[in-house]
Length: 302
Image (cartoon, rainbow, N blue to C red; front, side, top):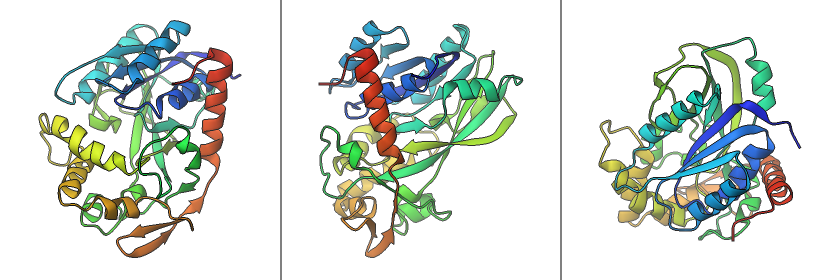
């Protein structure tokens, strides 16, 4: 068991993430985060109940429920990050429910020991689900043993014009060490106010962008209507706009094929095969996370 870093905390918004949430908790607790704060955005699949149960077992996990008809992710994450800073945590790692930062908490403490008011980045490594996974099932995540190549031209334009798969699109995310209040940008890609210097080290974030075919419908028909209500920039959360458009146009199967692995480890990018790389690291991370949660906290999602 890794040592607990009392200065490091994580913060995450979750919604309908029952397949992911035990692994997220097990991972961030195992790598030594002193506290992991979740904001549940109206889950109805047991996510909130699981987090509430775990929070009763350990003070290192907390959950706050928010129910609203808009997707105010940025505001809620900023508020929780500042609450953690006020509580004495100085290294804050925001993460999405499908993101696993690959860095031990005590390593962050060591790396930033002589630094103050500094940010650091993580970068997506996108793992790909098998094509036959149409609906989420227990432990399907262990089958995500291929990762997609990061392509420089897999941008918004080429993804939405069906030239590149979304799983080859790469984003940087921000985390930080500070004693002062911050204001995060949408998606945790930077700050509206916060540290203006960055550590040169960039960490990997294992990202599980589309875990089953039904994720496409969920993002387009569930998430997008709530995001649309507060969208000021047309480029913000463009992925859910894309998913809504392709679902309504009846193109979900083609997009799923472009972003999922066939039996030979290839994507079908709108008629063009694209090779994936076999990578067992995510599977190993998930096994360690599950083992940690079962042994040290004696719980799992039902």
